[in-house]
Length: 113
Image (cartoon, rainbow, N blue to C red; front, side, top):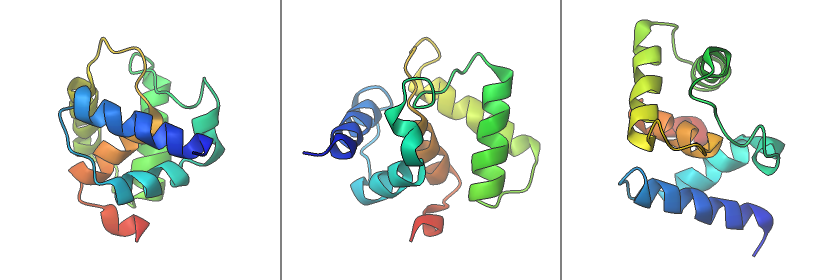
């Protein structure tokens, strides 16, 4: 099993066990691939939900630039919802998992087709 496949399995486990979601493995794989090499680096593979600048990066780089969303308060609300579902006290919020949940939340899976 490749390192990426191992990470995808870890992300799927987080979705099932921490977020109570049954992952769409095809979409999870595509979102993970879309994260690029950041998934292999300890610092960039996770998101710090206590960092305003980190959450702003998720909004601008992912929701606006990647998913093509308009900058509205709905984006901040969605990020907050996803962080709540993942668990605010959970120290390891994987970027690919957060991006996957945001993609599902806004029904933007077509971006990855």
